[in-house]
Image (cartoon, rainbow, N blue to C red; front, side):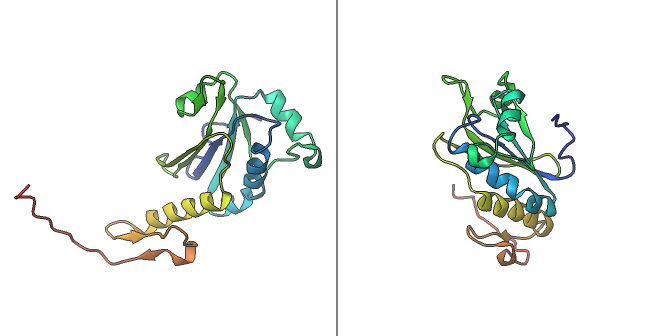
Length: 175
């Protein structure tokens, strides 16, 4: 599967790195993101996963049933970064081992990086938190211009709040 640079054009993109195919935490994350792919698409967001494994390894892993330690059919693309250029460019390469940390990047529909999370190897990411972040950024995109927009840390989409515009004045003359 080839992923064009225009794959997520005009949409939000969740781009995440994982260390290696056929490991233990990685399939739990990848399967969870794949299973939620349609929910992300419904809000105008594509999900892409990447590792330093070859496309042959990705192919073998996706053709191995989940009950046998594989991923099974995927609803998201798995990018192969065997040259480690993408993981290096995104700052997630663990150079001493030649694998990627668990980096997750949310890029908005204008191509602007909105959020970065980089976890150490043994700790996976939350699909629900990622969905909340995408929705919060989309909410502030829509309602945040010229206003103070608040998105609570645990708020589902319906609890995001927009407040009226305010003007703050500060006196810096004594500083």
